[in-house]
Image (tube, rainbow, N blue to C red; front, side, top):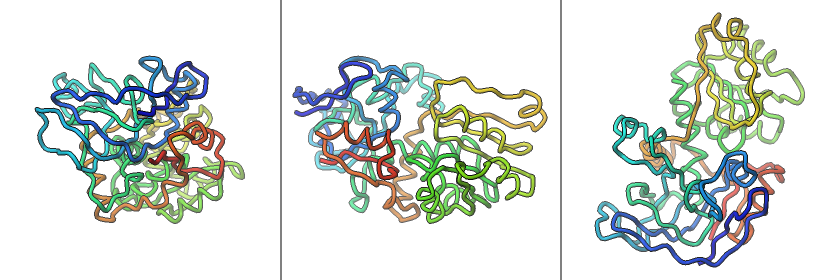
Length: 343
């Protein structure tokens, strides 16, 4: 089969011919139809986050059709349309047994620690697949596996509730879904989107943002303070991964509020323990991946038209053009929300 692999950190990915994986007793083989390109893939390529091996097939947002099942597999069959939960967990440690497999003591990630979805086929444990209804296109099913579910997990981690004022920094692959989820599913009272692209801010308004702030034109913290009458946010989210925007998002949080860090930054942040955190009794929350149960909820929400992903996939590339897809995302060519490899 054809597979696009990372051979050396900092270099472009290469198209290789490799063996189609052989499934074990509890595994399935998937004919990949769509694989989302995440900013994490750029981080893995560049060494910001280490990969588990080289060469490796990147890509962790995966959807396709099961073509083979192991002899012990139950619950799914050949021909099923599925998407993939990329967290490989042991299923028996303290975290797995309490429904937090994203913190598994033996955690591994498809597309980072083991071969992923930038290929024609992939084998995964059968318990890592979720069925997709025919109404959900493969490219949308693929991005449910990270871009949508990680945003959903972030909102749950920050305990967004009805009536909350929510600030979302970065209307990209994750932030655009956080806007829609906060507004339509979590019942936020006011959603404020912050970005430097007017096109993305217009999309945020279309998807449910009540207010938008262009950080290239005005001070976001001052503007949010004005919008909220000085009260600031109940919950703020940073989906970009820059020290500046993480620190700004922290400063957007009001008394008793929560700030969730989702974007990955190699830089340390500077925070005043008393003036910013203690005096407000605010919380800074880390967000790591998502849960399979959350993906199942999202599939139901998308399938019942409670969430609209039709604006999410802005670019599609072929398997041979994965490097071009990475370039589109990295250089923000054509204001990408999500770039998906389709086959």
